[in-house]
Length: 347
Image (cartoon, rainbow, N blue to C red; front, side, top):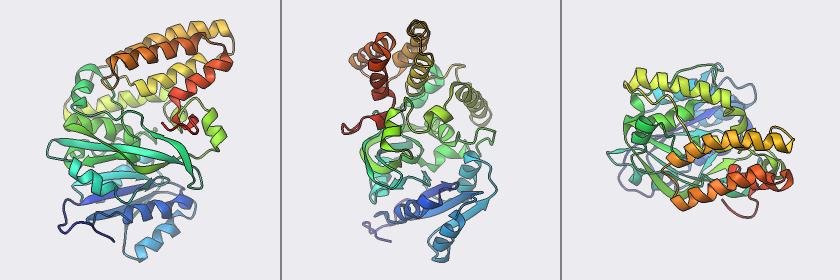
């Protein structure tokens, strides 16, 4: 494994959680092992895959380069729990098995995490199913500072990178783990992203340090109102149940009573556009849009991640999405809610 440092430095644990992503897994593991930072352990948790994932993992186990955990399918939270319990790193990352890290990811992230830092997050650029580059990156905004205070006092869910784009100080996760294993199999990154911020500051590393895989064709991804799997995994009823579980878990684990209403502009904008375009009738869209706008404005107004000018621009965007003809409103809505639709423009 290449190294650009003479001293070991903090140990970095990269935990790869996998379920039936055998076709991508070799590249994901290779990206974790190929870090220029020399003090890295790689742990692969297979959550009951039925494809060739275990054979792929076995190649790396035989070479002595990774630690493997095999378990029955229980969901993302259970995989996070198993990987974290097996890890020893001072800094912990959870890499989705279909995503990748750039070689200098750990080298860039380690210096950003000091004694007061709960996590550092960074941008991910897009690739397609075959690893081909796609235009754009996520997220548009990387929050920084004492965002946990806003969550604890005002219920603001800050702008964060997706799961693979977060590096956590181990001490910020100790009080949160083990995560609750429920019927919601895709909630682990939500708990880690927001729960960790209650234990320290968040640092933004303003660089692209990984690749986020989009699974549909460029046309399909660009035509969707929701980004990636957000529409499926963050449907309003699922999100409400997830927030209720999160509040209960934080109270039990950390002794904190969070506000009853937790809001995020990222999720609220998706709920807004999905609600607006649910009905084909124009007058019905106007009525629904007015109802949805109030919740969107509350999330936008309380967000610390946007300037007053940008908040005004987004408010104008929302009004146009409501009142314009459907043919003009749809691409306008996609541009804000789905960065994968911005082909050739970046994010």
